[in-house]
Amino acid sequence: MTVAKRRPATAIILTTLEGVPGKEVIEHYGLVQGSTIRAKHIGKDILAGFKNIVGGELKGYTELLQEARQESVDRMVMQARQLGANAVINVRFATSAVAPGAAELFAYGTAVKVQ
Amino acid sequence: MKYVPKEIKEEVNVTAVHPLVNFGYLLGTVTLAGVILYASLGFIAARLATRIGPETEEKIGNTLIAGLISDPESASDDRIIYLTALAESLTPQDPSLPPLKIHILQPETASEDDLANSENAFAIAGGHIVFTQGLLEAVESENELAFVLAHEMGHLHNRDSLKAMGRSLVFLMLVSVLGQGQSGGARVIPATINVANLSYSRSQESAADRYAIALIVQHYDHGGGSLGFFERMQQQELDLGALNTVTEWQSTHPLTRARISRIKQIAAAQNWKMQGELTPLPEGISCVDFVCED
Amino acid sequence: MEFIIFIALLAIGFFAGSYAEQKHYLEIKQRERKSLHVPLMNFGAKQELPYAHEAQMFVGSVVIANDYFKTFAATLHNLVGGRVVVYESLLDRGRREAVLRMKEEAIAWGASQVVNVRFETSNIGGQETTRTPAMVEVIVYGTGIR
Image (cartoon, rainbow over all chains, first blue to last red; front, side, top):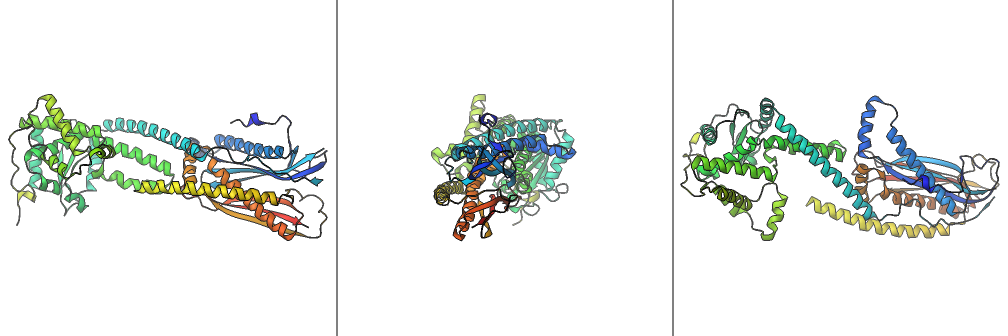
């Protein structure tokens, strides 16, 4: 995955608030969204099956979902950059099972320009 | 705060890859992994099969035969005695294998009528060889019958039926994993237990043929007439010309035509006579206890 | 015979599915351009109520399903893992369609903007087997003001 490498030079501010504290929103460009769908693979399934016997954290899945969620955020940020925004406010996540064994990681927010 | 309408032109939420390219990658990966898994598991299963002791093998065989013939122990038929003696005369019992037990599948006692009426013979783990009534009605000389018997003895000798079961079990496992559900597995279980349809690889079939022709030549001093049954089968088979190779590749049983020529090649290489006097079958081979009622 | 039917279904799924998808995307883009003047935002809950005469809730929803080709590809994805490319366009289309339905309804009502927009996605296809196509409902809701 090249998720980390695609990180922008000028970082876009992400907040879950309705603005950016200490800054003023001067323009807004509407909704931006990023989504990715991931399938777990059979190898990890079998390992997870073993882990289910003893319980505890499923490290493989945690990593998988973290990586996927990062990608959905990155895609959202790419949309924001296309619009010329420098912040995305009120970011929300939604994870949903699309099909057995496949989950969608979805992130959305409002692209704005702050000063 | 004012709204500036701008259009998002670039698609970021859809990966730019042609669906067919993606599909090819998926299919390739899965096929490769499947082939590796199947081959390695089949190898392990074959290894395991040869390590099963004769007693365990007999137990497996008894369960399998019970599903086929309602009461195999009590079946008394003089033809079984004749066939057992014939087998004994071909080659003495190998002490490391379970003792040979011959069964005749009658339409009345078999769980499947169709199978009993078809011209078939098969070997089951644990030293069982099953002849169908249909086969006994179709054979025309003892040499033919002995060849079929020897072929099945070859399978037992090579423990092919155990190996084939191992493969089936591997296949069952694969399908249940791929299907990720009970529905897929349930469909395969009957196919696995259906011993009459146990499929051997073509090399296993050829090995059994080689084993059989050697026994026949040793017993009768010639291989003449032993292939009569197959030659009659060949006449029923359609000649598809160039398509023959395709159909042969599809089925695990080699085409009868190719089979006959392979056996003849083996005989020619060993300088075995393939012509000679036929030994007649005992009267009434097609009837229980050799007694035919009109 | 079963195999031939399977291949035929795959081919039908692929060609019909791709054609429908291309057409839908063209339509979506056109409608998006037409409704671009009304802003959507997903904040507005914790701010002072915006000055407006009227407000009303708008909901846009769409249920989408995969074609046979994509369903089969997704089954393979289940074994391989990683990014499920075949579902991406499905959900992207579905979500944009749902947004457009909400937005067009709001525009017809006369909204000047839609605030506090929320997305919801749920699988309504059940979990029994991997062979059943994915059925996903996307719902978008927000408050239109005028």
